[in-house]
Image (tube, rainbow, N blue to C red):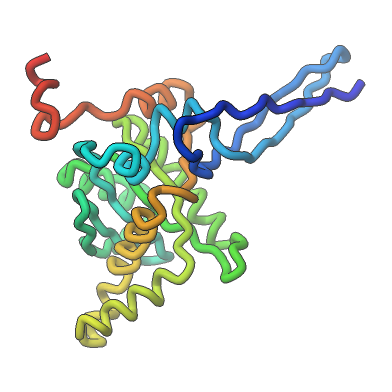
Length: 237
């Protein structure tokens, strides 16, 4: 006997819903005790969007919103560019020549020092918007890293990075940065362009990377402890 899954109607939101996407797998049992896995990839449901929106979306909804620093990440095969956004200021930060667990731990360390609560990871795509073999590699790294980040209530988003390397090169040439310096810093500037695109689009188009563990999902909903420099009332409470 075939099982039919009918998706629920999306909840209405007081704001325009962002096309954040979460991929989930739902199991449906038939009377014959067989399992049918239905794989869905659609716009995130309203509860996720309302409970843990990206900082860019929070800023759009409330211009007086305080806090929420963002780290841009341009993952490469051997080097990873890092950029930082604090308020409306976006700047290249550094280039890391690390991979695997060492890279993940270093990203967490930088986030801790810079009071970051979200990571915007560039997702490589082709000129026609399709994903590539490199896209799958980035998704794999982001998925592993999202587990570590969620332990602290920090979020990981994927942002289309197509063309950001060319934009970064043009930006550096316009600033008069010599070729020898450009070669060592372009990854950080590419990460800056990822962040600039993210804020320019007001957080629309990003994908939230959600760990499978329910306890980590709950930590994402709760978020990190609020910084008393931005929320002095929290210390009083």
